[in-house]
Image (cartoon, rainbow, N blue to C red):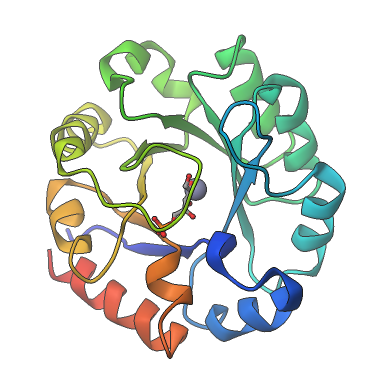
Length: 219
Ligand code: DX5
Ligand code: ZN
């Protein structure tokens, strides 16, 4: 059976001064809005505090997939679930209570996501697989949009796909996804694709989402 493909555009490189307009450009053709939350501690960049993020979550015409790149993640992740995110992803490298936090996210009714930086190995997290609704394999070092897709992450994507087996867990990739890279990521087993600069620097962001989806579906 063909895998269901999801495109989750990241607004990191969108124009923050007219965010609703930017989201409106892609809402009809996208599955979720990927919201990158950075605290300038876990990553060397800052995007939103919780209050500003809550406002975006409340006003977004698309359901939100929050990617928390923050040090204090065990404390803040349940708040993002409470704020109405469809999905809340924590970094394995940031959490001190991986099972507890993933369970808290689910308890509120959001999907639980577990993200791995390029140096982290999926094999180290197999024992928490039953707590996870989505694995996020970073294909760049987290912190900035517009970086180059790391092809040496392809084997981690395939290994994650094999570990997932028949479980209904989504496999998301984030970083450098474009018309040039989406097919190889899909071939390796990804089914959920973050794309930031590829979408928001395109002349027609909605057409770009459609083209990315078409390529991913070919795999
Ligand atoms: C990077 C973020 C990404 C970023 C992707 O740390 O997690 O979601 O916005 O941007 P592109 O698609 O430009 O690599
Ligand atoms: Zn992200």
